[in-house]
Length: 423
Image 1 (tube, rainbow, N blue to C red):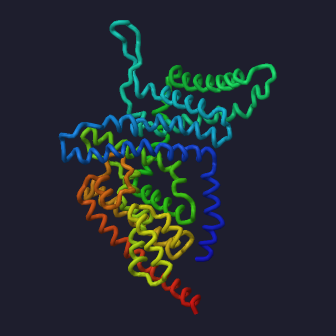
Image 2: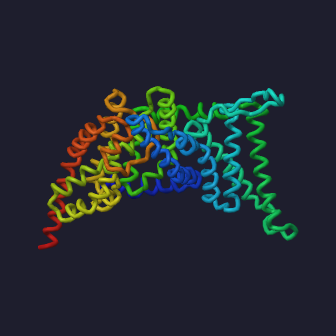
Image 3: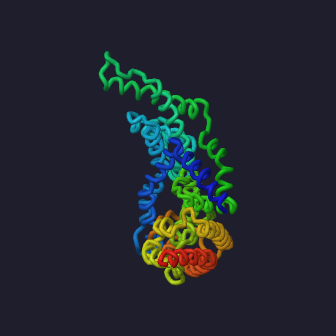
């Protein structure tokens, strides 16, 4: 066990931190964090729609979701390029790169989301948007790839240091030129690709990433994602660092579910942020199913430390916030509590997958980020299914059985240490 912990401390944690500190990955991760307010706005409407089912007289507010969460890819295309320039230390290009990325993203979507129609009055061909879904979750991978290409061009151009410290031109003229050159190259690059060569970037990028999405939306992918979140968390690395890689899969999944539900179909994608976090089934009390641990510490432990931490952490745990517990118990780098936390992430994922795929619990059909509402209320609101209460308590019992033997052993160790200290 000491050898395993040493590997986690000396090899895994520093290696993962180095990977997620990479400016290209960090830019995507930062963008995913910054779109949270737009997701929350969509969440408010999703909660509202639950009550609309019971009170049909309430007005339709779906347009709020359409122009907040439904514009997610458009926002991400700007954010990734913007934060890319920040991470790569090119502050002069932040806004320009972001806006270039946003407009080029729309250009890349033209063959897929728009059609040329002839105006009956003027006789001219006009571009008409026919499918705005690509501006939401459906276009997320395209937005990220476009933004990364824009980052590369601006980064390479910035390293040339063109017209820096020029004595013959005013600063604002130098700034214009240094923006125009990379922008022109980018517009020509994407314009020729899309309109001259008639290459469908959307179809190509989706084809490349489809295997990734398929793996992510499979049972093994679901288990791996849930486990990786907890694994990173338990070795002191922010689980949100994984969002740069995982979030596009989760967001695309819930966007597809929302489109299916709007069309009168049934959601099919289980692997979403809503399933992992918002239902508070896998992340009950927080990642790793720590709410039952908190209750065990409060009512079953004899050591003063664990009983005290149980009292302190109960409030946050009820609202599915477990940082005080994870770092206070502690779970981080504590083998006796890390192991059951890992087990919960796997067992919880398996149970949730099978009950949703078997139809025993509704698959989330709309964007929701209400995990800070105490469970099982958030579980019911996210799934719009009264059976959510039953499955919450079933998983609570399962997590309790997993935590109990490990916690009791840890509690005995602490009691012994406290007695020795008092003696």
